[in-house]
Length: 246
Image 1 (cartoon, helix red, strand yellow):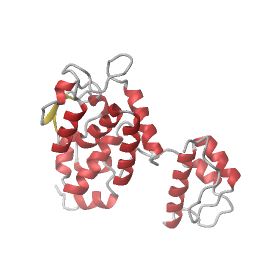
Image 2 (image 1 turned 90 degrees about the vertical axis):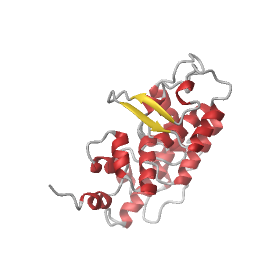
Image 3 (image 1 turned 135 degrees about the horizontal axis):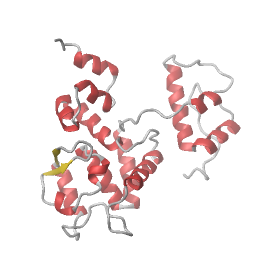
Image 4 (image 1 turned 60 degrees about the vertical axis):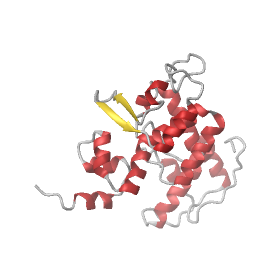
């Protein structure tokens, strides 16, 4: 449902106090999806004892909740929802999201790619813009199949993510806005250009527990930097460096 069509009535979380008028005012100021996200976040903080439980109104507290650091998308069902939203609007935008989730490539490194860079390949070889280093990013089996499907009928010299008007690569700001809009529609509040890269890292770590691989892939200076980057908890960071000693 669009912001314009959304009702002022919602099922407020257990401990959050708002009048319908306050909810409407918040929705008009920051967007109704953002409002619902903040209500949920404030409720969680109250449950953890980090905010007072009983307040006449939480309006000011919700207004004061500013942006947080970009986080990975942790819930797989939310990832599927974003994929569905993007797929419904554009195969190009959907594939951009899929490629980012499954390789850990930076957004700025994906946009200039051409068909010849991925078609029939088991890895993508690029010079990273931010570091100038040549890196190999493996393409898993399922992703290779999706590459074949997506590039069907395209020429080797075509850009993978071309603007429909210019046939040149989509601008970075435009690509970011596309991903951001879909993610926010799926209920993700803190979206940035690194959302796909962080999400790849988070889920890879959860499955394989291999922070060394991610540190190398991301060109990070230490494992603790990598763990923070992918949104690992402080407890995981402490556990990782607990045995480190010089």
